Length: 471
Image 1 (cartoon, rainbow, N blue to C red):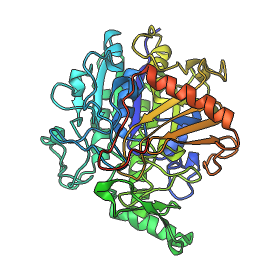
Image 2: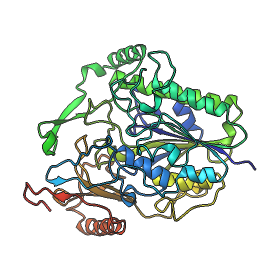
Image 3: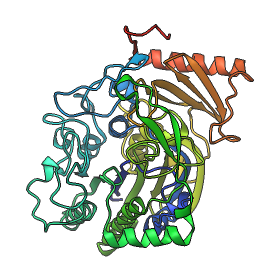
Image 4: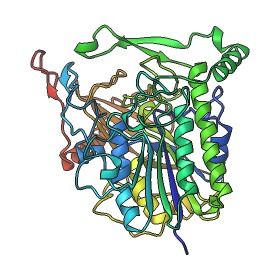
């Protein structure tokens, strides 16, 4: 039997409720919803970090960001951003580490063509996609944002400086077209297409006709008459002490809705290309995001409610993601799974589905989801998943560490050692802290959390010497 192709679509900053099939009542995603309905859709899927670069690293290595030492987003070359509040951010590495046998390396070793298209944000020279197992790199560079040029060309993305496109070309359209060209010219080898869109990251831009249509929709639904924001507490770092967290409390931004629709159309274009090429039944399609939706900063374009907060926070809105897998005839169709997953699981899962040998010494923190996808089980051989974000997030979050075991989630906040415990089955919005009501459970989970991070030699933030020691 021939090996299946793999398309791994990673969306930047897409929130848990940013798709209609995950509960959005404002955004329209019919093409993505159709793909989700043809496979297995997960309701308790998580990114390994509430910000981008660490999650991306977890996908390609099968390891937790804390094990890699890559725990925050990678800033511009030669710069540093150790935020200072009651603590000073933990240090971290600024590239996907050398020596990792990435998911691309694993597929290349099995004879696959390996293509990266889109955002990278895992390092520059010496750590680009072509240095980490990919034969082709379209659009992947050091920082990887659309930048001041935005989504409509000319873009300010170094890897796309030579792109020959008419002014005003939409970046998402361009990347999809390049991915389709690779598929059409694929040759005889199976392929691993790592399609990491820049959307729906800021700057939030969309075609004027889409924005107008969603503005009309917001008016028709009465959303334009509702207050979309609530004011939060001051941002807890010295360098942004006067910035207040502005939380979006409903999905109503017509520009963001238009940007989501651009993405939806392009997922449809890619699926149409697979169908035309006779590859739909032979291709595993994965769809996931790198962190929660941006709900508390930079315009707060989306809302993750009923989940708390969003990108950059330790709460559910920062890490719970839309995630589904489609492979007609080989995995379950139309199945909704409550199994708890995290992005480290993608590496062993894709090897398993493709019939390739596991590499347990590499994907040490991942578990194959293939038995779940095939409908063989509803349980995984794992008791908990973990997060470690020892940083102040640009979006308002503070340094912390957390875990989910069954229905319970524990968060430790490093500034003051505070513990918060939630039963997510009863309180997915994390409103009722059970730490005082269930002290024995909180203590037991905290002991496991500390043992986990000590085992990974996870770095911790330091006390700020200009302030009293909070620890």
